[in-house]
Amino acid sequence: MKAALLLAAGLCAAEPGLSALKTKRFGVLLLGEGGAGSWAATVQDARKALGKDAPLEFAEGQADPRSIQRGIDALESQGVRLIVAVPLFLDSQSPVMDQTRFLLGLRERPSDAFLGGAHALAGGPPQRLNVRTPLVLAKALDDNALLVEVIAARARKLSSRPNDDTLILVGTPPSSKDDALRWAGLMSSLAEKAGRSAGFKAARAMALAAESDQDARERSERQIGQTLRKLRASGGVVVVPAELTPGAQRMALDRMLDGAFVRYDGQGLLPDPKFARWIKQAAEQASKLPDMRLYQKDRKSLTPPPALTFEHKLSIPSQGDHR
Figure (tube, rainbow, N blue to C red):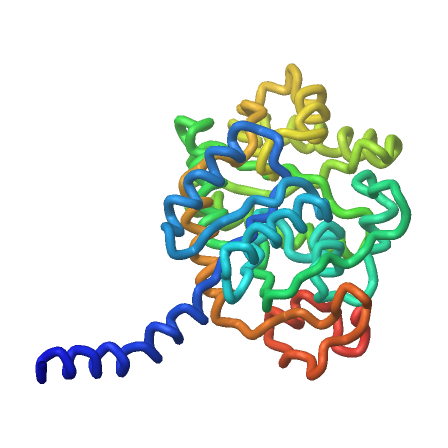
């Protein structure tokens, strides 16, 4: 009898710890374009990496409110105490990310750049999503070391003698001049780090204008073509697209690089098991941050608002302008 009482007392003493453990449980809302088999493989790898203790839902599309709401509802139905949104996108400060912040309640107004672009949705002004559970938003890939490793590995596969070759990372910049300058700095950093890691003679980033802007696209294609011809005169050239999966940029690159005598296979950066590692790391790091929600679905501010961490400041351009 005494042993039984001691055991019961031990279980009662341990119960607060178990309860605290449950309150720390989080679920992952993975955000990404989707649409290709490589995405399914990436989601599967991420679920394996996270294990049973952190359920994962994939919200497919670029700031698609229906898909994101389904993912939120599915995680809340599993009783998670925190939702960690992990954006598998290349840039934390893109219009897609800004629109995602609005939908999740981290930003007061929708993204004008997103709504005026190719991904705008019909059916009236966008509505904020219903998020009842505390939520945090991780950074996108940006210049993460694992992304550098992925680009370096893709480049190495295309070159037998990287010390004689130049690595070219080609991407499509945002339409805003300020955003394009910031994007150029990010892409240059990625190219230089990946080139150095893979042992290339040199590395640089190049901007290919969006297909919707014909004049800018033709101008950038001419500039890239001229640069590639100059580089080819002094060694081999390897071209890697800054795209997770081949999209509109691939068609432009296929046309532009035809007969250019560069090494290029038209493949995106997915799939790669390193992305599952990044998703797990990003989720675990972001899960330690306080609730980022600032606005509810009815557009009223949460009271009191959460403290602004570095991630909050990244999600919101400035403390005085939550647009």
